[in-house]
Amino acid sequence: MPPPEACPNPSLKAKATYAHAMRSVFAFSLFVLACSPAPRVPEAPQVAPSVQNLPAVAPVPLPTPTAPAAAVAAAAAETWHRCGALECLQFTRSADAIRYVLDTTRPRFLAIGESHASIGTEGIASSAAHLRTEWLKALAGRASDLVIELPLPPQGCDDAKRAVVEKVEKPVTQNQRGDNKNEYLELGHEARRLTLQPWALEPTCADLRAVSDAGPGSIVAMLELIARLTKARLTELDARRPAGTILVAFGGALHNDVAPAPDRASWSFGPALLLASHDRYVEVDAFVPEHIKDTESWRRMPFYAHYDPKAHPAETTLLRLGPSSFVVIFPRTTP
Image 1 (cartoon, one colour):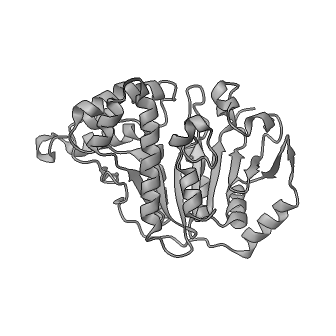
Image 2 (cartoon, rainbow, N blue to C red; image 1 turned 120 degrees about the vertical axis):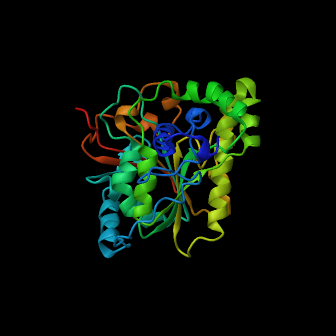
Image 3 (cartoon, rainbow, N blue to C red; image 1 turned 135 degrees about the horizontal axis):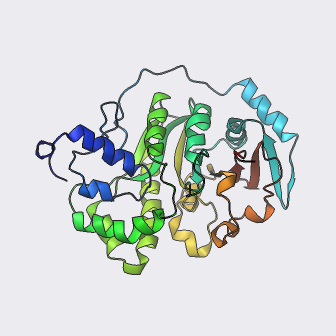
């Protein structure tokens, strides 16, 4: 990217560039084409590539694990019932579902996976929005860092960036809705406000060239790169995290699987972190019901055959796939 002094009105360019980039974890194009300095997060709207340099905000009082939270878990435990072959619970508030998972598993790593909001679901809160408005408060005081699946590309290597846009970004984002802008940006801001340190992923030029050189396998190469960068960031943070705190990752549900299918094993950082943490890694996939469709990709999800979209539409449903694997289905917004 050109140096700041070469760019007219860089702050306005940075705002447009970063806001659009937040619409997709693959949105490299504006970083290639925009005339802006290394982006920074607004309020003076500019973002550092690692996202950890969000503007400092006076800390607010943080909730800590309390007897009421334990009481929520104990009460919920009495209501386990069957959703097909799976155990499931219902909660009036989605935050109580994630508190239950935290209270009963005590994870060292919590990896939250989502399905990116698609065209046709405009006006329905996405998983990222639920995390920002409901779950971050439940995580505050327990978690120290939040790794967001947002690859921010380096300066230079413009040809590789353009190739990644054509081979990866456009095919992946073509069915995603257009009003997703700022969700990852807002998530980072809210995490910082609640004193969780947000982090992005930082691929190198060599990483991007490897993706662009993969030809028809570029999308798979990108999925593998995201898994590798997320694992590396979490491992780095784990070496210096405050004792007793949780490291949280948030991104696509293809990357956090505890037991991925063989053909998707290289896309997931779950098995490696489960081993490294001595089974204190927990996968939580968090889905908006309006996003769940009768398609091959959804049918491959382990919970899909046991999920009844007509059951408990006004409540949050927690399904337990195993001791380290859960699915949360948020309440329906539409009738």
